[in-house]
Amino acid sequence: MSKIGVFDSGLGGLSVLKELRKLLPNEDYIYYADSINVPYGEKTDEELLELTSKIVDYLIKEDCKLIVIACNTATTSCMKKLREMYPDTIFVGTVPAIKVAYDYNYKDTIILSTPYTTKSKRVQELIHDYKRDDQNLYLVSGDNLASLIEDNNTSEINRVLNEILSPYKDKVDSVVLGCTHYSLIKDEINNVLPNVVQLDGCRGISEEVKRQLEKNNLLDNKGTGKLSIINTKSDDLVKRSYEILK
Image (cartoon, rainbow, N blue to C red; front, side, top):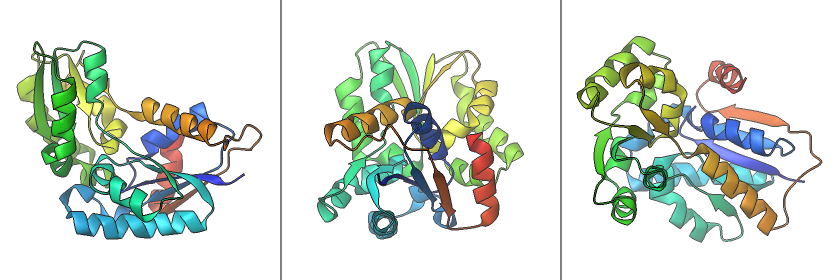
């Protein structure tokens, strides 16, 4: 059987990969981290399409039967175009878990995402579709958080989180993690917003991957769960990726 390809602008998509491996342990995976180009949230649509199409070309050559775009920004900007460019490839994307906040009746929710995702048409559509009349939604840009997470700059991560999230302390009951990188700093977010539920789409993405594999008769129940990781910036980040997945 062929592999599942997962890609992100950097380490963030590891949060999705971790859930995928829990749900589908027999599948083989390739994780492609484009850390040399992080953050995607500051790039134009044209730049993003050029970057992501090169990654997709690579993953297809590596015999990937399904590709997960484990990046909210890349999904919002590129998935529709990538599906048109690669009609024989199955894509599963990532969107902020705004519907989850709706489904579980949270009333005061921060949507924390990259500058690109925060301003995107897709987020506005999700808000339009899933915001209840009794619900308050606060759009908060994570600015350069993704880059700080890549650099493992804990002190600066904590400073930024305090700056952007402290005004909402005691005002919200939930925070949507609208960038897969943010799922790697849940403890730090909890330090600023204790007792606030954190919502990400990792489990839902994994379940959608399983549905697509079953639908297309591509599910592998007998594999060994092999994993290879590519990072465009450094081997040290590859080593760190394996540590994150432990």
